[in-house]
Length: 57
Image (cartoon, rainbow, N blue to C red):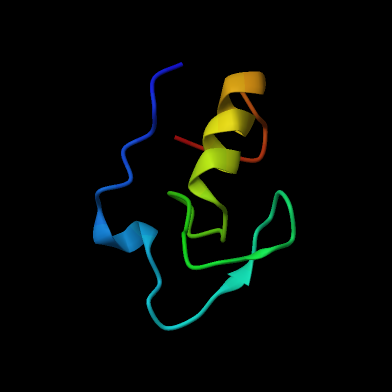
């Protein structure tokens, strides 16, 4: 799978860290659905589950 595009500023919350939905450790990164998630964990998860039910297009 290709890497996700994280350049959009909406993927970063400079005001607070929240627990990553995949590992529970704090992160300022946000998914396209505004869920807190680490970039590498999100990409690994997408790689392992190309059609997860929890995300929408």
